[in-house]
Length: 332
Image 1 (spheres, rainbow, N blue to C red):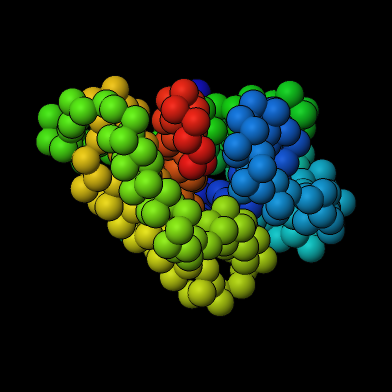
Image 2: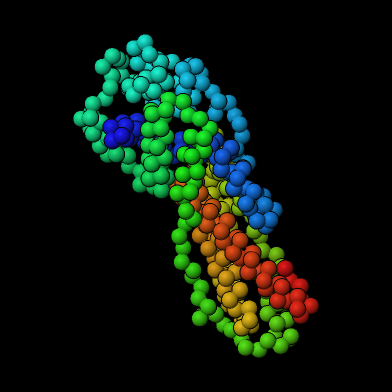
């Protein structure tokens, strides 16, 4: 098992790692992750344009293509560094897929093409030394690719269940970005006056902030989808989308700051601070999502944080409106 691990790391294509890992994530997730995940979305998220991966998931020829008909998909050839237009890259009479299945090197002509333990160690050290990427994507990708290549070496042909297992493992390992709540309940301006007039004054301030002032908020999920699509298609013209996500992040951060300035009735203080921190943390998630071009896994962690915090803020706002309803006040 150790020998396979060394070989797999040696094959890892460091310079193309970000594109390849995102491409595989998108393709595999299309069938195994997104469909299951989407069904668990809360209605608010669904109405907000669904999962950001769904738009870029399509069963394209890129997934099915095997140009040289050797049993390796073209995208798999990129991982093994074999020639997608040549069934037998090293010209030793055994096609690339068969060599991998037999634990042989598809880049080295046989019959003595089994990499020795010593060569494994040298190759592994060189691969790690050559990799200058310390991004979350590079770290996760090394693990994901290593798992894929080892499984491919062992089984030859991967079944849908194998791919599902790889994707489930990969996606479950990507946790939402960690963030500490910025705003503390102990620092919020709280009033003990809960007369109808005091509640209405609070409601009017919330209405002014959320409704009357007509602040411009972009469709951040749509922007994220475009970024994912552009990266998948190797389109480097993503400046507008990156700026858009960062703008959206700044707006939610500003919104949270304005909310924190509002004097809040004691009965609504906990919900108010929940919503405030939810919006502020959404800003952190959005800033992470803007990193798609340089660190796609970090972006996915940001997306997961944003999803999580949208639900949190939305739940708090709904509870605030429920409280308002008792006084015949309707804001949200």
